[in-house]
Length: 408
Image 1: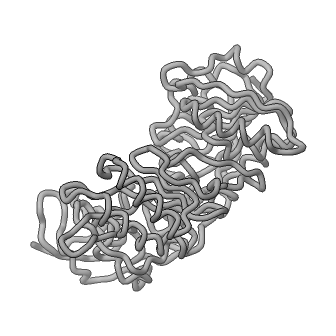
Image 2 (image 1 turned 180 degrees about the vertical axis):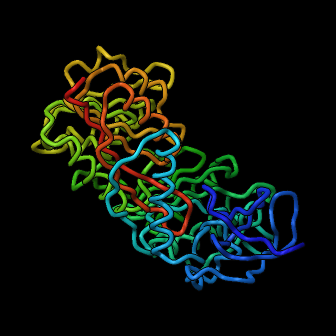
């Protein structure tokens, strides 16, 4: 085909040319050629490179599906991620001040989901390739904490003992304060011999916890996570910020936003990433759809010293959001929804007149949509802090300060 020029990057990190034509691992301004299949240019060759193009630091970049932007300079990636948020807000007619992006360092990812397939000669462990079900071995990785990377040996052993030949294991590995925490899915059904074998393997590899198809097999030590120095034991496989650096950046932004608030509602509270640190200075009402997470949070609070009062509520905030009257005693709200955002809850929050809202998001598009609703109801978007804890990926996280206008 003829040469094409890349105009911009899409939200998934692919270059986009007129058509549109999507070109993986390309950058704006570059001239490329390749094999056009539908709307995707396969096997792209860079004819005119961008000044922002760099040599990928990881030798697995071209085959592994974990990173999309290692071919771009750090400065370009940082500016692009901030601009993704800026453009999402602009599409809703909004603008604000942006603080410098906080980017997690290499080798800081404390959790990873590995695929482990049993083979005739043993097992194959790694990440899935881009847009495929092919498992790519990754003996090196510039993202992962060294202990998490080394867990591939454990994953291989687990696959040999407990994977079928048809379905690979899905192994979520999390580094905790007391050792590795492994949650395995898609393994063989448990029987007596397999239970014994798995328990022995957990002891041999000094795992803090091993769960198999949601059942705990071994618990050598409580897999503690520290949220600003307060210890919690998350349920197996539960949500956790990807890096401690990213968690710290988001937490510090949230604490600054709520300031001296004495009564705080934490929506989509999880295991207490924000609730526990806030409890040092304020009463917190934590609301979450999964009761197991709130039990974990409550247990952590009861064993913590010098904290304020915690109350919890299990509630599906998509189907049954808190109503405006339920915020009447609240000085601040923290909201950290999943990628779908919190449209139903924000519609109610907009009429609650809570003085300040700390909005944490992993999706700039739904964040901008929800923020527009709050601005229309009298809030001012004072600033945004973009956090890049998924380094070299297209993933963007942020914390934002929304304050009720005095003119309301």
